[in-house]
Image (cartoon, rainbow, N blue to C red; front, side, top):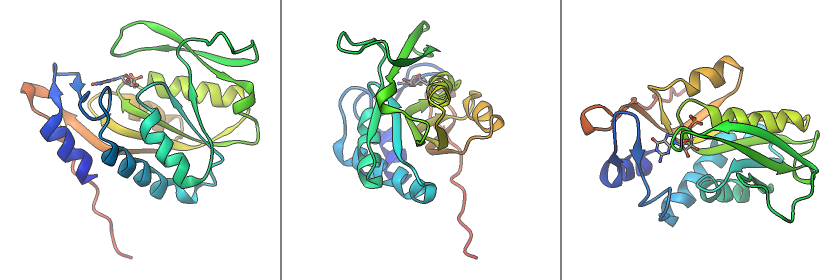
Length: 197
Ligand code: 5GP
């Protein structure tokens, strides 16, 4: 997605060979125009998926997911990283190891907001080693719901998250795919050329 790639090139900072900082438009300050277009792009890619709910994880997944869910006319649920005092014990929980924080956290969703009738689109900001996505998949599977696919804003293709998710049989749609962050430079994988049939 051109607008996202330009934002990464112009406003992203390579912190190391493994970590990209994008807090000026995605992880702290939000570029609202970009968020709206990202959400619309997810909705376009998954429109035929018979989706009944969008599931993401707080906090950076919420903005792009909100627009995607709005476009698809379905509710958005975000998994919480800390259990709220107002939540009772009727929750699904999974443990997720955080790539950036290097610690494990339980993520939680109320049983009221994920049911066995749901066909779920999972969205997250980054895909690295796939732990956050696998945790969200675990919550969906605990609910007995099915998964339409996984939408990722920025995929670091040099890590093995996509391979894990595809091996498990899931459709992964990433709006920007980064081949490398070496030498302080962002290199993207070429976007697939759409064939006219
Ligand atoms: P995974 O669970 O796939 O290993 O990592 C994905 C999660 O870690 C995302 O939800 C995101 O919050 C965080 N993350 C992973 N890599 C990066 C990165 O390079 N930059 C930023 N800002 N977050 C990342």
